[in-house]
Each structure stands twice: as structure tokens, then as C-alpha cells.
Amino acid sequence: MFLQVSLHVVIVFSFGEKVSLLHPFHEQFTSQSGATILQQFSFEQKKTKIAQLLEDMTGVMLASRTLRHGSVGQPETSQLLLVVSDGRGLFLEGVEAVKASVRKAREANVFIVFVIIDNPSNKVGTFIS
Image (cartoon, rainbow, N blue to C red; front, side, top):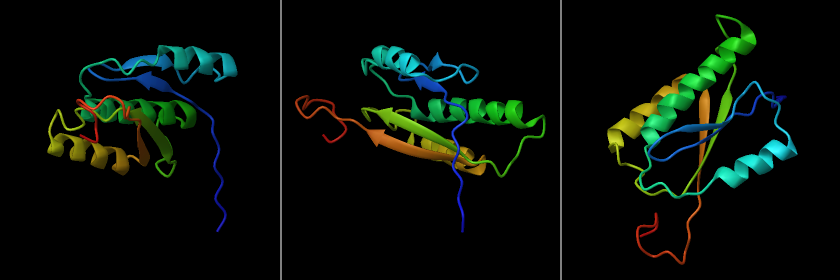
């Protein structure tokens, strides 16, 4: 079996209580844009609305696929959603809402990788506690 992975489009958002676009898919991703994006991450928002993020990102990824491949799109095209979070308030919107959002993303061929970055010196309100 041969698997070809190609990276054509990079879209970057920050999220928490709200979702903000940091790098749109129509702009080329460069080392300079990467540095600019990293400077905008703060992990300062008090809430994590992961279900809303997944809903929004699934819609953005489907739109990106449609723009790249025409109005019908290519349903066999898979996309990767990499989420980096501190993991706080993961189920703020409810476990079922998060599960439903994950299911919708999966049905749209969006694969989710969820990476939790935790600060071990911050014992209060961390994902582990």
C-alpha cells in the first residue's frame, strides 16, 4: 500500500472562549508567518469551547476542500486538524456536544489530533488535576 501525504494548505486559529483566525488558507505558510502566529498564542482564555471549535473547523475545512476541488469537492480527501490546548474546560459545552462534534468531523474525513500542553507548576485548574 502506498500512502502519499501532501500539505497544500495550512490554516491556523486560536481558540478558547472564541475562535480567531491567525493564518488564512489562501496565504502561503512561511517561517515568518509561523513566527508571527506563535507570538499570538497565549493560553490566557478562561474557557475552552472545544465543541464550537470542532464545528467551526469542520466547516472551514469543508469550505477549503470545496475551493480546492470545485463545488462538489472530493469526499475521499482527508484532512488533519491539529489542536494544541491546555485542556482546561474540555467538556464545558457537555460531553455529548463534544462527542457529536468529533463525530461530524470524522464523517467529513477530518482527522483530529489533540495535544495537551500542561504547566506542571500551575497546580490549580490544570488538565491533570
